[in-house]
Image 1 (cartoon, rainbow, N blue to C red):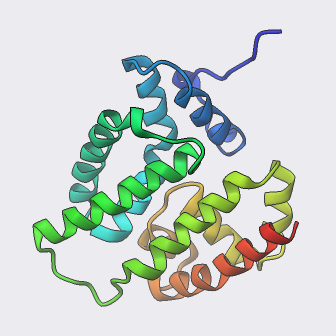
Image 2 (image 1 turned 90 degrees about the vertical axis):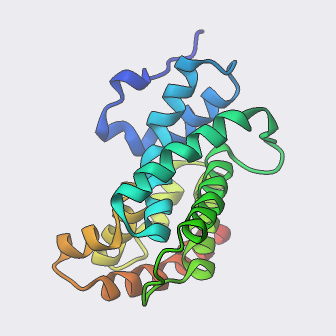
Length: 196
C-alpha cells in the first residue's frame, strides 16, 4: 500500500504537531530538489526561526539569518548523517551555530538575559528527546506532568516557535517569568521522556 503523506503545500495548522517530524524525516531521504527542499523549509522554518531569534533578539536580523541558514543546510545536505542525529536536531544545531557566528560578526550589543550555553543546549536536548519519543502519547503524558500555564508556555516556545516576548504577552506576564517557567520545565520534560 502506498504511504499517505500530507502535501506540504496543504499542511493544516492543526496537523502540524502530529506530522512534523514524520514529514521532515521523509523528505530527508528523498532526492534533493527544489520541491523537496521547499517542503523541508515549510516544515522546519518556525522552529529554526525560534532558535535564531532567541540568540539575535531582532526580528529582521533573525529573518535574514534564517535565509542564510537554509542556504547552508542546502549546501551541506549530503553531509547529514542519520546515524548521528535526527534531521530536525541537525538543522537546529546548524541554526544555533550560525546564529552565534552571525551575532559575533554583527557585534550586536549583549542583552541582560543573553545566555547561549543554557537556553540553546536545553532546547537541542529537548528536541532530541521529543524526536526519540516513540509516539505522541508519550509526549502528551510528559506534558501533563507540568502545571497548565507552564505546559502551554513550553508548547508555544517549542512547538509554535513563539519568542519569549510573544509568549509573555499572551500570558500577560514578564519575559523573565516565562523564561523561569521554561527553564524549570525543560529538565522535568527530559527526565520524564527518559523514564518512559
